[in-house]
Length: 579
Image (cartoon, rainbow, N blue to C red; front, top):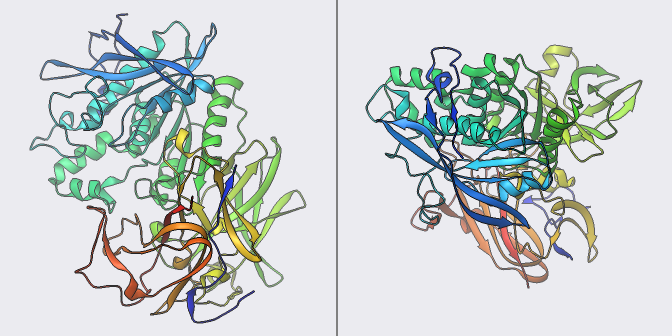
């Protein structure tokens, strides 16, 4: 095994592409004076109009249009897709809420139908070039997501009309003969996740909610939404936060909650999600995907479905969250994890991050726990015992899902008066990247897209070389493999060293730094190589990288290359396999 040398990334070959081979009227009484709790109060008929049949993966569904909110006296007609399982029912039902810039996709509906649920997904983004008029909701005006259009009226925000459309979507669901109105769940992603919190906080008919990302706190976020909100007058910011931030609805959540989140997500900041969960009075769980940003791990998708099944089909059999305590024994820093073993446990681990860094920038490393005296224990490596140390207990169950626990924080040398550093920093990423769990495959945010158990990273020997191997089926010709190892304090600052990459059967590879980071002044750079068949060695130095502009998805060769790697927080390897 190669040890220290003068390369940022050493020749431990880490990429190999291997082919495995009606009408109804509803009114909901508001719970309080907030606009968010005054959604769908209209004595309006739904005026459901059923449209054409659509099919996906053998599942037949129907398009429909129904009335959501009123704007200037005009009913807002919402486009949607509905599907239900074969048989007599009654079936539990899911209201699926897509993310910003997306739409009501047949794939999302068929996913839930195939899992035994009736499902309705509605479009709230509005017209887009690639979609036809029968697929998108045409709002009376272009409501801004966070903009006030000059008025201190939350009803000028699209989020108000989207949330109204969501609750009216529940009206549509409970009017279906095969739907059990006492078993309604809501699942939303990104902006849809944020809407899920508001719906569950205002509608007593919801029994289970699985928001993905969308934890709120937008006024403090680094992204364009946060910037756009902060540009508004302070009165508007306060009004928007009061009416549309999930934390404003924490105390009024109705259904049990499973938060599916990525530890480094720009629209689900880890600290914001932790604060939100800590404010809930309803039964709740976590399922965290380490190191990811706006990407889901397959086991988190399984967790979401198991949670829905537990609450809506089986009567609350979902395991309790693990708990974690830090200890210092025999000169080693440990985590002791208490695990709910009412369901068969496959493994227990601790995902830990260390050093002074914002949640979005942390590198999370896995450490497997072993069972002793009825508890699970993991020895934890410390670089500097005087800096913060974060840990998330993770329990993987044999059914294929992972349940996370609360994020714990300590400064070892302060809290235990003894721990010292147990690892020595290195400038070689591969020394910390031997475990393929330090790398991950960037997957989609929707359940149907992220559920790819055949796409995984494993350690394997290929052609006499030790590699991190990517296995998938023949339908996948491209890949997106990421790591945050450079952000770990155990990886010393990179200086002007070069990056050495070994590939196998890779047609082209874009190496992008700080991709999708959403951090002020964290510049993105990109270099492209075309390795080809067999094992190929490529060396990339700072001068080989060019500035990448995310807003235009292009490189700008007129801007200078990076001087060194000292601001490297994230590496993405985006490429295609050879034929």
